[in-house]
Image (cartoon, rainbow, N blue to C red; front, side, top):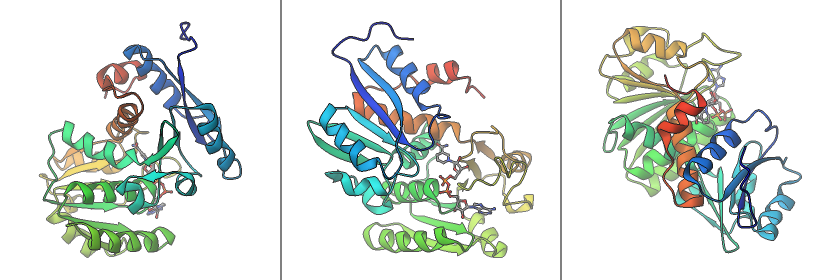
Length: 290
Ligand code: NAD
């Protein structure tokens, strides 16, 4: 617990509901302490009804910024002054920066995923990747990857409301970036096999593999995963999902969702404090070493 908080410290919030289970306050405050920077991070239970007043609170109290999570990621955009291209494209914001009263919305989830790959020396710029899922995490990754220069992205999802949404976003990305984004029905396993075969990375961005679907995998036929494919899973609990187990047995390099989570937090810290987060220290402190 920090006991040196004085009148110069600035508050950073996390606005979501429910939120008490979140690891972010522990992670963020651990980093601020290590960096010896004058910030405190607190979680606030803010639902959609309270959100407009909470945003006024950021301005009125001069918070340095705030993280934003469900159910507020989309709704919050309309209350901000500026949006990054990734937020414009995805329609979702998970980070607010307050710069002298000007509120800017960022989305660091996709940044975290891209940084995780970079740190693992996996280069996807100018190449093709395949993503399973079309919800919040998948959309953030697709948008950031397209903006960063990935050449081709194939997205597979079940035919639900996420499917329709990602089709619209794919059209925008195809129009506004050099990336070619195609959306397919997850039920079409022949197409999935074909698209994976010339991708450098496969990413699971669905909840299949974590509770209540722990032990399940959207890919059950190991021959769909060539050994030179890198297989990533946004899930971090369990550390090794069924998909990652199958991929590892095939000889693929695997990465779980911890890196994405840590690096998206690091991107937030850079935005709010200008500092580089001590990632190895955080991993050790939070028990995230694999
Ligand atoms: P979401 O609810 O927005 O999207 C869920 C997606 O999963 C949708 O595309 C949906 O169609 C698909 N889906 C759900 N059930 C399915 C099933 N039975 N079969 C096939 N597809 C199914 O959720 P989200 O926020 O995008 O999160 C997705 C996953 O990513 C979760 O496991 C979450 O924990 C993880 N995540 C990780 C990080 C990180 O930093 N590592 C960040 C965000 C989310």
